[in-house]
View (cartoon, one colour):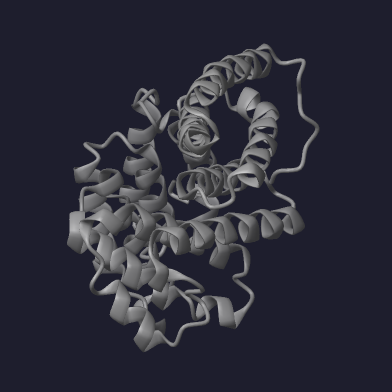
Length: 308
């Protein structure tokens, strides 16, 4: 999510949080009874499955919520809960990926303080690295590998590795963004591109074309005179929109901000943003992202006269 600020007081006064914790207690009650029946040897697998399912449920609950203030206030409780679950199951790749995604999404949507953005970006990336290492041994410590070695294992990834590659790449992109003043971090963009290129090769429709959106961003970071490839970026954005059926509104917002502003295309800029505002944001799995996209679309339209 393109893309994915976290140490707030747990707002137990919110009914949605109380409901979820009641659900969590119920979710763990049955598995412990099953463990007693199976014996200790069967408990590990049972509880690992439960924690993974719980993490997935939490992710879905947040991403499907259209009330930004509820999520802003309540998400830290879920993030702390995930920290606790990871402490109990530190090798659970699904749990690590879920925590990485939620930390990154929360930071991108709600955190403005730079120090917290950096802390959360670091956390999201480290969680994704741990998950990748658990899923594919050659992916361990990807930053410290020489680029040729990195490229060699990325080039032979199989379809079963696509979730690992995409999760690592998106968290890595978020980490680079919060460290954009560090040239060593910027140099890692080539590794993110290699992972996203491989995702496109394996299944360009994965995450509704999300890899195309990220490649579009990479191609529009600079004008052609400085090495940018805006027209390639436009093709990636348009393909991402096509693959999502136009449902992921954030892609159009990023298309407007990254490409239309880069090439000073006011007509395209306003058309994309007005299309975003006309759409129903409620789409399974990305409702929160779409609501945030509509807020950003309003801000970009308001600043259009000043920019163009």
